[in-house]
Length: 511
Image (cartoon, rainbow, N blue to C red; front, top):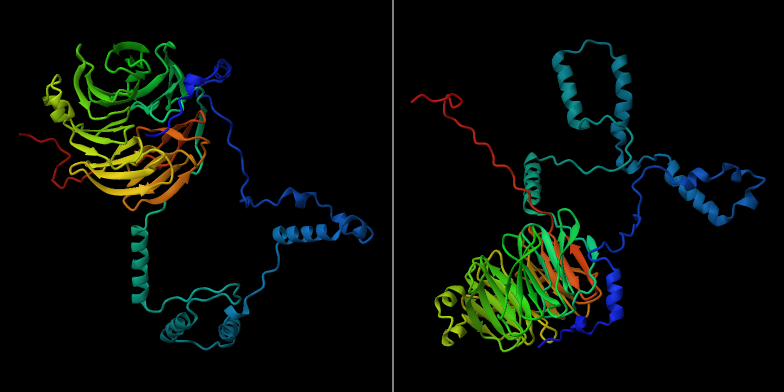
């Protein structure tokens, strides 16, 4: 089991009044400007411009300038006024310098006619020994030029190969790009109150109200506010089309909304006996998980929507995730159990037969706390990552074909949510006590790539943008933060135009 404080039920009227004064999803604070350690401007500072050279008059020197100010002035003067260029004698060749100084005079004195062959030999000799050197004074040392062309070619090829194979390290900002206020956000480990749809609209449940934040426009709208007898909202999940939103309620009902018209399409009743804490879509099938331990498949297109049920959890179901293929369902519960269900077996079984309701594919008992964080790997279809609660603190990796645990990593804190990077082999986890951080892991070595801190309470909810680059997190500190943790979206390169070698390709054919 894992502790989850349900703050909303115990909030006083004073706290509710204060939260009403706060505007939901309003921008919190502003970015603090931190000046760079070293200015890139070439203009001298105003300090130099404001100095009065009269301070150096002999009559007023002792009275107006003290020793520290003098040192400061001299440092600024030497920095911006410049100094003499002093040649580096160790870098100079005096024999070559003497030759360059005396050769023009000898050429003027020697008036005899020189043959073309002798003149060509003289130029070749000068190029060989002088190596096209024309300067006499040297101010710095230059690296020696390789004499062997083969060695130069080898070093050139090695450098080019290193440039091709070495990939530039991705910059990961350590602070959130944007922070929004989220008053009345329920601080409960077992709920799922944040989701990001395929149309780039983020939904978040704050108390009894569901808000929509359009990431493309930065605008906020209120979708629905339910009555106190029905609320608070306990889960939200977008359908694959990004237009229809499923909302789970505390009174065991599930509502289906059309976000474009803000219209209630349908209410699914009598699915569960208590709150619906988790939802997951599989095309037209909406899977619901309740506090009663039941998992139900609902076909929203038909009147009798309950088509299948899964019974394997003895306590509240807090995590549901369908695989990308839609063939397997992962479910985690407060009974520390993780189940893998086969959709084809479930749909072919009889709904009324109690014997067929427990046909899970795998029953995994590796965690020692509630299993809420679930994430299917995007580059390996049979790989599932799961995270345990406060008394477990582990991220485990499972082969869903065999049920074997491939790896287990102790993170040191409660694992609240997991997300895979769609472009790299990386996994992002959000945590609770003690640091309330986001941790980016390199898979499969599970080396920490980065740790992002900013929330002051456990990071319960996490959602990924449609392009897979930005991550939104909501925490018990009632803030919604956006992190550019997975880099920038890749731009598809236009297909290369193939040249047609067929003669007269530009002319129309006659058949």
